[in-house]
Amino acid sequence: MVEKLVLLLLLLPTLALAAPLTLQDALDRAKGRSLDVQLQSLSTEEAEASWLADPRAGSPSIRLGLRNLEPAAVALEPEVVARLRMPLPRPWDLATAAQQGRATVQREQAELSAIEQELDESVTTRFHALPLLRDAAAVATELTALRTQHLSLVQEQRDAGLATALDWLESEEDRRDAADDQAARDAEVREVEAELRWLLGWPEGEALELAAENIDALMATPLPELEEHVRLELERAPRLAEARAEIDRAEARLSRLQLQVLPWLDWLEAGVVDSASKATELQLGVAIDVPIYQWSPDRTRAAARELAGAKLRLEEVEERVAERARRQRRDIADARDRLAVARAHLEAIEAAAGPLVPLADAVLRVELEARILRARLRERRAVLQLVAELDRL
Image (cartoon, rainbow, N blue to C red; front, side):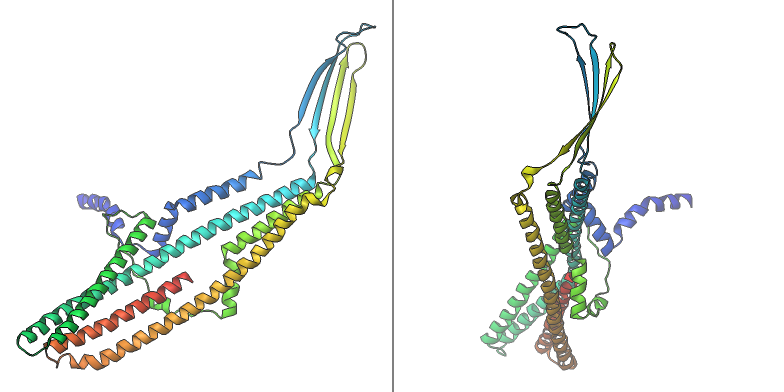
């Protein structure tokens, strides 16, 4: 009993690896190995720490000196002078620096969200597409086998004088079309699987088994109204958050330049003079900065243009996001219409050809089965296209 328990514990990692991969596990794995996500995360952390570590207040200084080292007339004791100079930062400079720093963090976080969103879309579309493509490839393989069988039967009839050369040519054309379509489906499976393996960092020699997803529930998901859909996209689009953060950065830069024209205390100085010949002296001094050379509007013109450009870019991003939402709805509606046509055609073919299959001769039976498979393959393609459009949504 103990040996069996130990063996089971040793096999648990292998059993866990052999379990089908879920969509959430795939998304987490892709984010964990994505270089773009990791680099952007580091950039976000750097932005969060940089403005907190830069108070823009300058550094205090201590000045030491001796006076009266070589008196010309009267011999005096040397004086020891110590002065502490403390720069005084402008409060509005600190406030605008903090505003710009927070906006920079928001921009970097929005960029990270955009990268993660694009990665999620890439993984999700391939995760849903791969099982559907494998199913379509299996149907295409079965269709090719039927067309090959049909060609063999037509050749036998031709040898017996019951079929013409034109019948054989038509059968060969159908077989070639089926084989070409099968090759295309197999190539698409290999391409999508290779892309998904690369996104997940999945070893080439290890089988990639995906957990089943409820595709029917996904296709039946109702869409919100157009206005609600556009509003939701405008709220959650990372590129919009990035554009708004860029506006905040531009406003902070412009405000800092505009406020630099205000007079302010430049520094405060306190000193001590110690001498043996007289009492210790305390000295206090203050400097006021009057930036008269910055009272020109030209120095803020570039920052104002940058702010205006950031606002224009925000409007352009809003228009693109809204148009993308409308285009997605049109694409989904078109894909659903094509799926309805494909399913209606499949039902009609099955209703018309299905009862005839047991009664037909060998050649006609194979032809009927091939027609049903061809309609089923069209339906699989329509499902694949609709699921891809919903995943992009």
